[in-house]
Image (cartoon, helix red, strand yellow):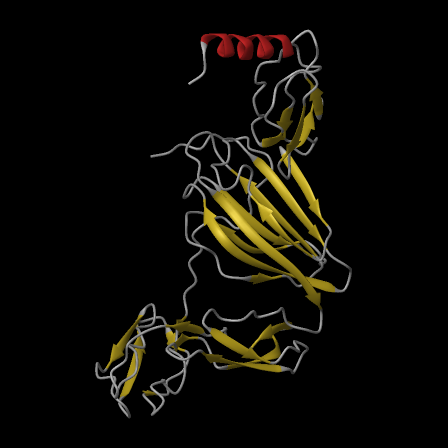
Length: 340
């Protein structure tokens, strides 16, 4: 144990050295440095889409005062009413909502602009998504063509599917209201050429064969031992469909499941449809039908094959289109939203 004389000497050394108080950390920012003695410096920076206002570096002076006040991280305000704006020009990157993974703020109106080389396209993968349902929105727009196209408008906590633009500019617009917030979103983007498909990736617990994604190219997939394909296709081709260069099907999903030796997995039931048949053994068949007003995309029966796989993907019931959210969201809020 220390003697009273030693403790007194330590106390005198600390007082003689002197220091400043903890200045804190700005909201939507971070600080480098945690010592507040004379001569120590602290460095501040802000998250993407926020601007540092004040001193980036402050020093603890001999008078026990910092050389400057703690700075602030604020959104850039523009005449267009956008409260925060950020440009991405790299060939790939990650877009995070303000303060992610902590909750974003209220009354936000933010824009992220991804600008790639002319003649290229942009692919978006949503890694996480959690915003207040119905009142906070993220709109994704294809801004690099003659007419701006809304690729999707999203709310709630369901992670959206992947998106690909037709042009070389994508605009993301996020708006939050005055109350409840959420974790926000984490989006990865990559760029690719006009006459090629985006990198389809490699399924977890699986392998991909083929690394060419040009129009007409095909890649195939195989699940690791102990895992089976539960959705998607074992082979996909980069094709021209309705004027867009896209993959012919979705990437498979490999899941570890225990199968009976003579059966396939439950194939599921299409939305707005019905399944006829409940036996999934080898060589068993099931058929499907749709509700009135909907059309079955493929009326060929599903057959459980010897490799414990159905002979083709689950069909869909197509017909009516219901849009859950408005297609366009203005950058100006002149109306008060009322929650009921």
